[in-house]
Length: 310
Image (cartoon, rainbow, N blue to C red; front, side, top):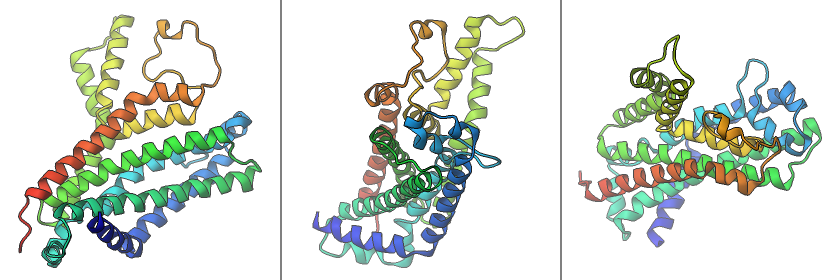
């Protein structure tokens, strides 16, 4: 742990003092504040239950700006990629990696410290943004987030950290596999584009091929088509985070996926408790955690087997 702490402090200082982190932090903060300020004036927030008014600021969009949730889903992968795409190959190109591992620290302390420092940096920025939005709700609406809202926001924060950790682990993996930082950055961005944008089109094409729909399609075929499309969409961490956020930030959500008649039997339109909402989203949280663990595990093994001498 001594070696991990040393690497962690060094990397944390490098991240917080770097210009590229300052640029991405400014973009994320300004976009999030603009979205929250716009959402404060939206009809959805003004008509929301006062018990969950703060949560509605995170999910509602106002005017031409999308919601804060959209910005987090869109910009969080960029934050993870920027913090990790040159974690290893950047050190190798500068000739400092051999010097680093020659110090009296274990080799795995290098990758563990780098990962934890980057994740802590992203966590500090995300927590600061949520605190700023809380300040917006107090200043513009005169309401203070209650205990239930703070608890749900905490779960959303943890889910966002799992989401960022996946992209961070993926960027670190590419920084280990590729010698050039430009190549690792492009590879990570390519995966982000496919899983964040093209997955919608890919899921629709595959669903159309397996369960084609026509003018005479039965309700059962429509349901199968939609279930297949959603199942493919869930290969994307971005879609998993959207489902988690939908159920956690909107207590009225009871079902994720197609609304079938048998699922609506006995439906009572009332907000769920935090525990009940967690029961709705635990599969998505489990998959997000598994993706992050597996991706970092592959990065760890690849780094331990990689030749790092010049």
